[in-house]
Image 1 (cartoon, rainbow, N blue to C red):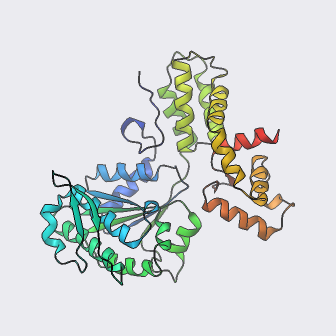
Image 2 (tube, rainbow, N blue to C red):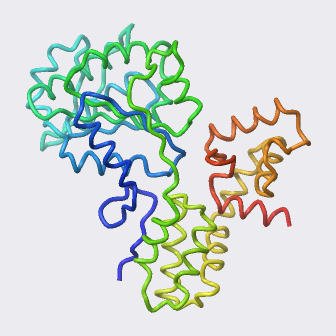
Image 3 (cartoon, rainbow, N blue to C red):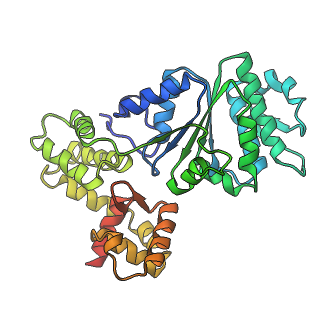
Length: 356
């Protein structure tokens, strides 16, 4: 019997839940000449949602995770690698001759590109321009491609002025839709909503919220056996713990399902047991994370665990407090939806337990 819950990877098919309105909006956008800016905290399912939309409109797509890029050259190489996954490079090599810096490509015996390098150049942004122009040329001759920049805010750390160059390249393309995903709201807002930014209002802005309680409740209930007498209570306990966070809800529901199915655990205790197991499993990681926080960060986190909102925190100067919160949000430990809260409910439980 297969566990009906999935987390940690792209969620597809039967594991995908809700997002009906967002899915339709993205599909409509992909059938236009516009671009999308999608912002939400990490692990809210941005990548899964976009992949589902692209699949349903049957468009070729390349996805670029900017967290895995440390240089402009690396980004250009990543773009080409992704293009060559869709179109064998042997069929495109005639287009590479127009590159101002022609890449060196290593291949497998079957002809697949496995490594791409460039000679040193004084202006590395021409590599990006040539790579994205290849995407445009391929789209002109066939199906229009979709390019997804994941964690787009990381672009700003690659090279000074790269945002201006990238905007200049993309704005002249007519056969490609671009999707910009980001988890750091303040930085993404700075990029796309500040008037002096090159990417000011460059696309349709969409914020991804939690999955509604009623939809998640139905999704979980349908996947728990009807033989469980306390199924409704189990579902409510799961959602009360995770507050409908997509990743952590799937994680907790998966463990609860295992405990009910294989261990025949008492339904009244199973959610608490699953939470205890998850907190214990990650104890070492949580402690390592905690030790890397300074005293101000720890104070903020302990306050949030105890439901002390920032406006009511009298222990720290306002400027110090908000600097800490900004730092914690940029690193993903704190998110702001209705209020500020700790992103990981199991880390929050660990902190609460350590407080005694």
